[in-house]
Image (tube, rainbow, N blue to C red):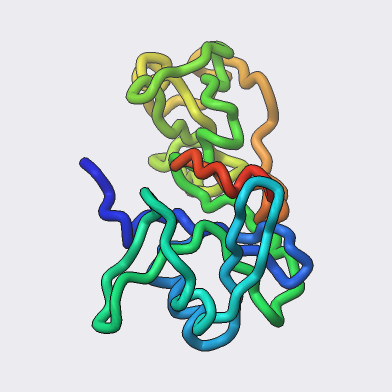
Length: 192
């Protein structure tokens, strides 16, 4: 399934110190530009120029550039914007759940050490929920589905299994570290 252009997180957001802090959709980026809380960057090779909203709208559109149609004509969708007043780099903690556990455990079964492919792993509760185990970072690990099925409602010790590492809540990291250039946008490479 293809994600429509306006709903892709294809605009890199920089704080006022030009440090990457987020990736947003063009819709969100245009909101920042129209309210004056951000400037769009035009990047030509090593030349980088910031533009206010009205000046950005008046710019010519290079061949092949992504655009959005407006009543007054097409407007180029920026690939990078700079917030004018925001200076922080937010810290982001992974969200507890399957994706967060996959990331924390490196996609590896915490009993066998085997690298898992998508669909081969699931969440194992070290102390099973049926015995009062909680849904939390310290009680859950990524496990091979077959191993977890065999373990059932037993503790690892009862099932003859041993954890490779003691599970802990992951540390929050700067937002910059969590940004992925999924669309392989050339202009982002200056900032990531």
